[in-house]
Length: 538
Image (tube, one colour):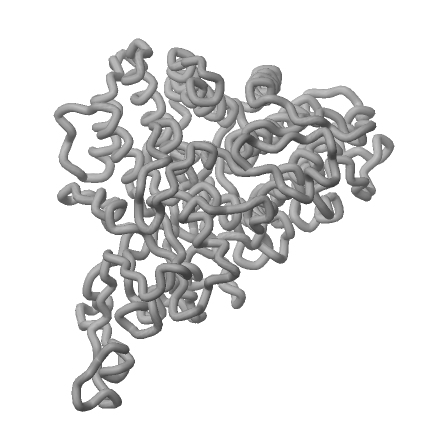
């Protein structure tokens, strides 16, 4: 069902995609006020490029996508994910190492790609809004415009969160080059856009609106902004975060899924009752989610029915993995570590040699063939600190606990893209945002007759996870709960900055420079637009 929703939109609208980061780029379109679509299905098709831009900007090439480059800026810069080189492979010019060590520069490829991705989405939204202006006035038009404005606000939120002070472009084809706007001004613009869009957004959930903005996406995004307002603006707005969360909770439109793993499986979609908004993926039509490709060890391919060769590069750091320590917690099962077994209980054996297993082997039979029981060790040790390289023997290649949260897809494409949609906002995050806002000073509120204290809210998730109930909760414990519940969902950087922990040491990082809380404006953009201003510290 979810693939039907987006397959037509992708094919109908690819000609609207932007070609570069120029905010005034002239994008060719066959849509004009004279032939503007009028039916709901036609409107969905017309706005399709905006949603495919979020998921995978280039359609057939998913590199510049929510699940890849955007995700890497938000997770590889934290303690939650790491992509070390493996025997000289996957160093890729040091780009993953620079994200981990907080040593990126003004020309980092991922920083550049995400800037282009985000402003590409803003540009598409502006072009659509300009096209829609001359269309006949009706309810469908008003809702479509509200959806486009909400998506534009979402892209602006991402740019504000990642880059701080960014230009604001409200209209397609504006004359002149846009100057840098202060983060507070961008915040106010996003806030006003969402508030103006909400009256015309739908309250319908499920298949009819899956993957498109509803009132509840706007409420969730406002809650996230207000939760971070003390960092963004030096102005606490925690009661407003609670109010936005309550707009979602009192609607009774979302329910925690009984099966945690189902939220992230290849067949997820509108049936998931707690997903408020998702980046939608299709292994063949909307490519971008390649989590299994990056994280799975090749020795696990047969167990999970994966037919392609995984890259075996991405894992987590041991201290983050060790947060998954609650007895019986189903969220522990999102990680693969230790000795590995087939589904029938037999050990997974890898045919190798003594030297192939351990390149430092000094015994009498380095070339002797052995069967080694696959063992993924959480600890990561480097053979070469300068290149963040673990080495090239089997023991080195199997370092690091691996995530299977976005469960391996046996029906992945030949170029290793999966069908798993990626939640952007879901009910669990709303519960945790409300709990945190209360811990930071907002009054607790009641929903459906239940006074929702932080402990009550956290234990809703503990109950679903089959984990022991908490007896108390403070901010540090809540941060760990967010790690367990929302691991690899693109919020770890945002959380660590809000908690003042982004400068801490982890893994092989020791850079404590607070200016790394935001990424630099690209050198290429500065040369093209003299109105842009570089972020402090770069």
